[in-house]
Image 1: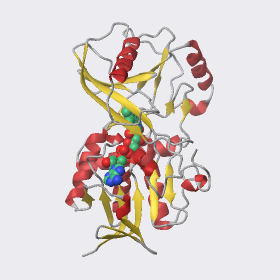
Image 2: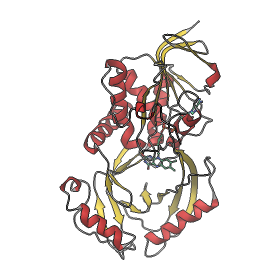
Image 3: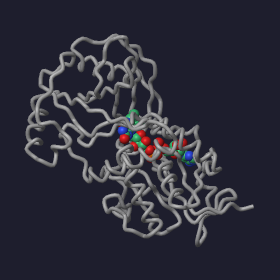
Image 4: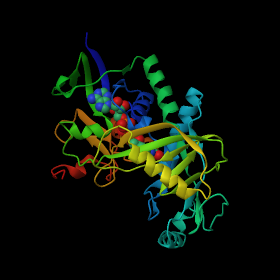
Amino acid sequence: MTRLHDTLIVGAGLAGSILAYRLTLAGRNVLLVSDPSIPSASRVAAGLINPVTGQRLVLQGGIEELLASAQRTYHDIEARFGINILHEREMLRVFRSGKEKEIWENRIRDSTYHPYIDCKLHDDPCINMNHGAFLQHHTGYLDTNTMLDALHQWFREQKILIEAPLLYGDVTIEAENIQWQGVQADRIIFCEGWRSQKNPWFDWLPFQPVKGEILTLSTDSTIPAQMINRGKWLLPINKETFKLGATYERNELNETPTEDAERELLDAMEDIFLTRPAVRVTDHMAGVRPGTKDKQPFVGLHPEHLQLGIFNGFGSKGSLLIPWHAEQFTCYLIDGTPLPEQADIRRWHGQSPG
Ligand SMILES: Cc1cc2nc3c(=O)[nH]c(=O)nc-3n(C[C@H](O)[C@H](O)[C@H](O)COP(=O)(O)OP(=O)(O)OC[C@H]3O[C@@H](n4cnc5c(N)ncnc54)[C@H](O)[C@@H]3O)c2cc1C
């Protein structure tokens, strides 16, 4: 017997899971198919939320709406499932050079930055601050694993999660719908993370995936309560445990942890502290970020086959970007509200992916 659905979503990382959650709350009859044996970046990510990023301290466009939507979505999930996933923490940003400090001095002349970066230098006797440091506000992290576990359990209870691979050859595109293994859906939306670059219907989109690795460390030394960023970041989870990340590797795209990355991260940690804490590596994970050429997401329907869609390309900022884009995409799919131009995949149609 054929199962009828409005929307078949492929991939239950942050993108697919939050989109499925939004569409289900909006009354859509969603089916989610995801293969737990295919690695998910969301299961590796530290979930940092940071409005001002990079050496040039660039403020994320549309930050107020993005932050408001992230808070709304994550607090709603916390209340619904009785979990604690959004941890708001200040971030100590440590300059690595006089040049970085100059950039900060320019930024604090711009009042749009004032809610997000402190205008005075900050001191900490344990941290190596020969060029200075300042505090960033509206920063924090999302406990992505706790959230995904809760959402997946909810999907399982409603019998709308199939834990299996989807093979492209098994999808048939009909005039008004798609068919896949006894399922008929008005639409299929691909949320496969970086693997979408091999998707035959969306391989014209210029993905730029970037591998990253993260360590989890335990220590008996005292570690600071706030997050620290000195190119690499340190995220305290509790008094004895912190995460240290992340590396960026564009050539070797796989989910295998490497000794080189472990050394790079531990060296960076030595540069953060005045006295190196004694640490033990308790976990080491690797994943691939679904980056894009213009650093903007890929959202929308296929220009020729409107039964096919994509919700992807959230790079290294999934925790901040996905809730707002999921709201916008839901409005587009239900009411036809135009998509945000910067995310709409039509910007790339007809162009070479090179
Ligand atoms: C090391 C590292 C650190 C990061 N740190 C941060 C951070 O601090 N803050 C932040 O916001 N972001 C961070 N990110 C980025 C973040 O992980 C991504 O933006 C986000 O998780 C992308 O989610 P996604 O759902 O698009 O992809 P994924 O999480 O990769 O999900 C894709 C899903 O699709 C499934 N799938 C793929 N193909 C198929 C198929 N054919 N059939 C069935 N299922 C399939 C996979 O199993 C997976 O579940 C980091 C990423 C990495 C790798």
